[in-house]
Image (cartoon, rainbow, N blue to C red; front, top):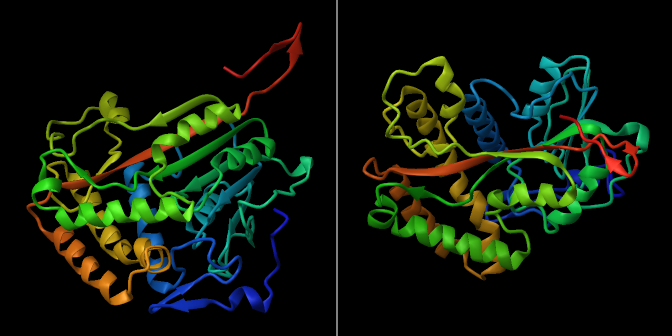
Length: 337
């Protein structure tokens, strides 16, 4: 836990309400997305999309043994941590978040802590982790260098870090983003501007690999498979499966591939449900917009996202690296193979 972790006192449930949405009370204002039931439903839907993307798996890091201690940073509803705890009942799984929105009935090897991942981490050396996981942390961290330094310190030698991060930028391969995505393009440009001014930029997925390398992690891998979603219409053979993890996630059921079509159907609902949470606080607090002006833009954005002629997608990164197992022989550092 960090210097700011806290027990469940009444103050952390003193949620802040603004423009019809509910926000966290602990370290109020540090995170701009809401924590209300609408957002919790979207988080759980996003978890389902990630599991579909990974064919039911929870992670990409090549864990060679069952981890003893696992940390899930920014756990949200806690659904990833609970699923991991169910699959690895011998592991102790800790989920941390600014919001105490996790359920009370959880696997016996899983627990949740209200904590600020940007504060100093106070875990003792004997509490080091075998695996640390984070998902969709863009917009949450101001100093990524310090963040990864703390992760490095609190991982066991040989332990793995994994970030599952989508690019906060909607694209297309057939130019429909330019032809039919005028308001989507404006919306994401303004989010990028506002989140940069706020000091916690959303669109940071492509930087994570370098952050890990600079922190000292070895064997860093950024899995972004360049498979065009509308071209996978040939038979799929087992040896092709590693190539076909769809990190270009379609928005809408427009892809030819059955799996991508299903993912796209869910992902469109995820994106539409996220249009308001991603920008409402940023636009009103940072850019000085009124709620009414913001809602006009959001309605136009949602219309473009629902248009079946638009073949939009977002790219997803699975970035993972290993803390070296360090021993010294004549001054040399030995890392695991």
